[in-house]
Image 1: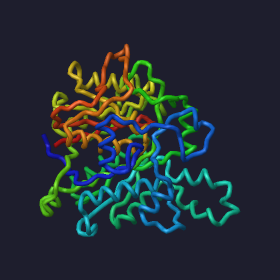
Image 2: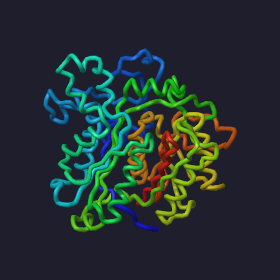
Image 3: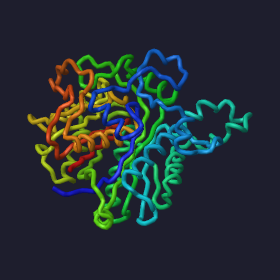
Image 4: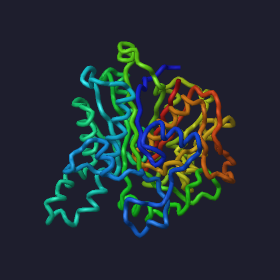
Length: 397
């Protein structure tokens, strides 16, 4: 097995907590963060459950010591808070010591402020500051400025696989010697745009989602941000740094099947997992736990289950989806669940697939239904997005 790229820091803001420690405690106690929407006024408010971060924008801005006249969107605020925690955990005091990059993912960008003020943009100078914060790269630029990163900075937007692809690109840039250190992850805020879009697809659940259950009724949207700090072996050795885990493998493939649905054979997911195993130099039998994409939609969970059967055959490892804790956090999901995978390795435990009761008749697969302790060496994490974009990450001790 190849060692992989070292992870030395991580940070997260989600519906189950605004730090790594708060998220860990919620996972260990199987405490879901799903609830009624509080920060957005919409007529869907009482008919859906979401994973919403408790802090208001004003509270997050205060935590970041931002001036009152800032033009940060909620996406940028969440991302800045999580990235700051990741850098602090990695104990990086001088960002300029090494060639450092930032790869940040988002799907919705600054839509939360645009949909709030767009009718006033032409007439109210006070809100025109949010016009420039609409595009997807704005949150990345603000996070880079906050962290002092002036080198390689880019944004990835490949739907729900975005942050997984950010982590994959970051690991590759370190492996080929283009960067010494890179902050990777994603951020997405809830918005009416997102809620209405998924509502029109008729895949939102009115109750807490139940991934992989035969009677699943759809997903819960969520908002979150999560970032990892990846560093080269040379930096780790020179600074005698503690390593949380390694990015040991990654793979990306495309179903080329449908704009918003996964293929019936799980082709993209299968190819992504196969490639990740090849990159890591691992056999499928060496995977101890799978943090599944598991959105709780009819299409995704069946497609992913079939892909799991194809890649692992009769010996499917323990698996669970953590989306019933946080909701589906879209572009941030790949990083949120990468962080959960690393916590699983550190704690030697597998988190509960909340809400599961009955196996699907098509596959009869049963996920982990309550917290289980187990010695873990390798954890696989899946993230699949609209457009058929399927990504798999492998994390190892």
